[in-house]
Structures are given as structure tokens and as C-alpha cells.
Length: 58
Length: 144
Image (cartoon, rainbow over all chains, first blue to last red; front, side, top):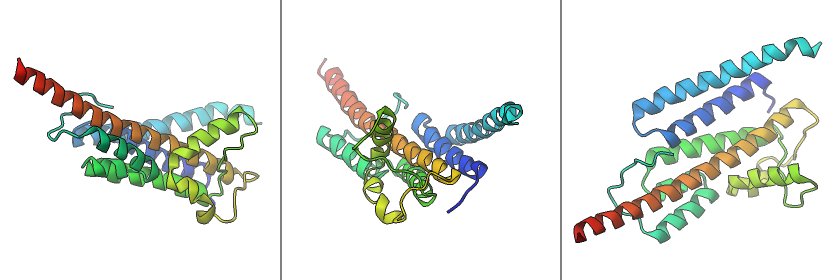
């Protein structure tokens, strides 16, 4: 199985944000809100850091 | 982990320890024993998905014969996968290939799955021990 960096990151973010939501929150609405927030935060921060490093890759 | 969680049924200490070991061996099984069905399903899916994708991407599974501190840390993280750690060779008979980027990503996913499962085991222990504490408090209040 070959996945690129972005696809791997999405799987990582999805699994970890879901598990963290169930570990840290009690009600289902809180869990959903936290999971969505954490998932988006993982993606936005990773893409942001990726673009910050872009100039150094040349 | 939330300390404020209330437990209707007290959980005995032996069951707590059995749940911790079972949860390490099979992700989510500890929470099944503690009757936390929703958490059990989510933890099982999250840990197994990460570990399986990591293995199928030919990630490296560290063994106990560590050459340096990083290998030791990798082993400690990977062993958290429980039965998936021991079945790694069966799931991916081709073995690791970290010469390609996908193999390197897979190595990280396997380690993440292991550490995540350790967190789930700790939560199972916390649920059991918090239940015992609340039962003791109830007894004390009833006696006072």
C-alpha cells in the first residue's frame, strides 16, 4: 500500500482526533465538536508548517 | 481524561487490572469489559486502523534488541499495539521498507497506534479506580 504524505496525515488526524475526543469529553455533542476541531487543527497546522518550510526545500 | 465521569456500577479491582491487560492485548477490549461500548468501538477502530495502515505501508516494527535509544523508544511505542505487534510479521510478511517515504510514514503510524493504545489502557485503569474511590466515599458518607 502506497499513500502519499497528505493521505497518511489525514488518516493519522482522523484516528487521533476521534480517540482524543472520546478520551477527554463526556457528552456526544462535545466529542463531535472536539473531534472536528482537532481534525481541522491537525490539517491546518501541518499544511501551514509545510508552506513555511517550502522556501528551504530549494 | 475526565475525572468527573460518574459510575453507576462499582468495578472491582481485579476486573480493572484484567481490563487493562485485555485492553493492551486487544485495543478496546478493556473498555468492553468495563461496559463502555462506544469508547471500545472508537478505540479499536482508531488503533487498528493506524497500525494496519502503518504495517501495509511497510513501516518498521522495532524489536526488543535495540541498537540505540531511538530504537528503544520505538520498541516501547510499538509494543503498545498488543496483539498487532506480535502479528506484524503475519500482516506484512514482506517486512519493513523504510527506503521509501511510505515506509517511513508507516513507522510513525505504528508508533502512534501503540502510544494511543497505552492512553486507552490508562483510561481503563482510571475508570476502574475512580469507580472504587466513589464507592468508598459513598460507604464513608453512609457510615457518617
